[in-house]
Image (cartoon, rainbow, N blue to C red):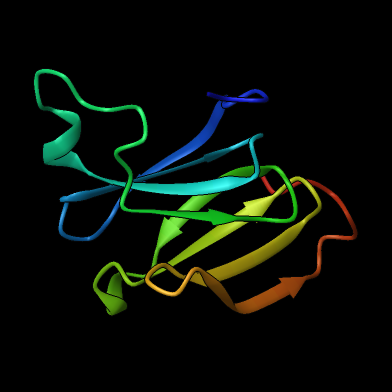
Length: 104
């Protein structure tokens, strides 16, 4: 059961088109296999991975050169972070927006 809002602010397909990632005000990046979402009765918790982030998310983008293993995010605090999806950890972070929200 959800304890807060799960409003989605960003959605992004990986380079293969097989994995879908979502992010938003729940401060989580969730990735799903697209085929499982298209089944007749997908489970709400049928995600491949879930990465908790320190701020609400406004944008997502997969690194095309790393075959869906790294996803970048922009957040409400103005920080761009890249995460290793398999390990669920940040691998790069840059804060150059002076606390202003990143939109895309």
